Length: 277
Ligand SMILES: [Zn+2]
Image (cartoon, rainbow, N blue to C red; front, side, top):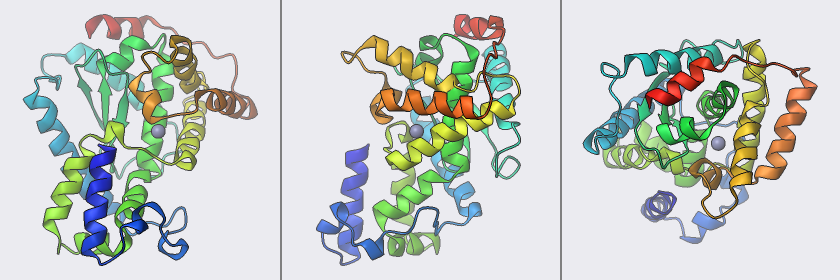
């Protein structure tokens, strides 16, 4: 997917008359400052709806999108975790984004992702890999942070350039809009910058603290488990979210600085969810 986006970015930049080198070494002035976002929040919502539509179609075609109607109890349990995290009081777009969650039946993929505009996808392999509900809440918090902090659209404007995105936003480049939505439908493998990863880790602890329920270093539990597994078969979330050692430390330090320690959560709902997948 990353190669696809780079290829797409290269052709997009060529169209704009920029040099191919700009893809790898953008001029300093061409890189918007962190936090600058040419997309409006409504456009995050619109792009997200398109990405979610493509994502649903893709996994439906493979027979992997788990329907709510036939998995009501599993969704009830998962929704409970997602809602607790979403209602932590620190989201900027809690009521603006839809924040729906869907399960993808793939036991080999230990991953979750959120599209721009807040559509959440969780692979069954992630739930089965984790040991407790705080770990799941921690990973969900991380992905929710990418969406709520609007990392995807900031990344897109870095990859494609502000000019291209402006034409897309103005409706002059429907083809590219569709291509981007298609590319993002594999968002699980989208590579965020280290800064965005660190920010999402930090917000995961802030969100979990706000739940007044989950252990705030839940996301670290994922990395600790992943490290123990060794490098032979690194989980998907790890290959797209590198540097486990320093991240475990940072997450645990954040949790301590929030004064969030010693929370332990009843695990029976989480164990039931695992059994249902
Ligand atoms: Zn991430």
